[in-house]
Amino acid sequence: IEAFSAGAAKGLEDHDRCILARRQLERKLMDRRSTSKLPALIDYVMSRPIVSAGMVAKKLSVTTRAAQDLVAEIGLREATGKRRYRAWGVL
Image 1 (tube, rainbow, N blue to C red):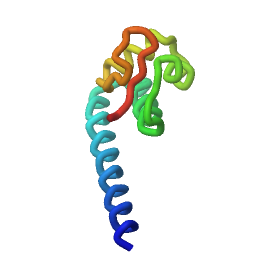
Image 2 (cartoon, rainbow, N blue to C red; image 1 turned 45 degrees about the vertical axis):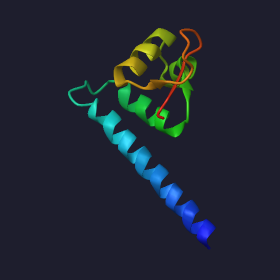
Image 3 (tube, helix red, strand yellow; image 1 turned 120 degrees about the vertical axis):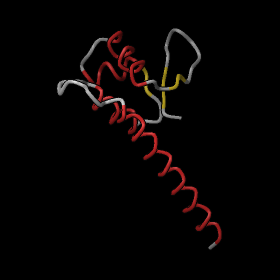
Image 4 (spheres, rainbow, N blue to C red; image 1 turned 30 degrees about the vertical axis):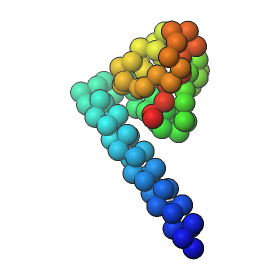
């Protein structure tokens, strides 16, 4: 029973962390145009543990350069540490 309790506590911590991350990302949506792709990007990033520019570009129907600009605009953390084949996530 203690293992179930510890697992549930860890799950709640992860849930709280994800909710806090989403709120912080949604703060950047204030004063944006209604046609902005940022809300869709936030939904996509929160549904995946890690995303690349190609994945974002395909999902949002934008170019890879536009995807990189959108990711930079909301300030995701880079997971790869490289300039080429970058990947970002909410860590």
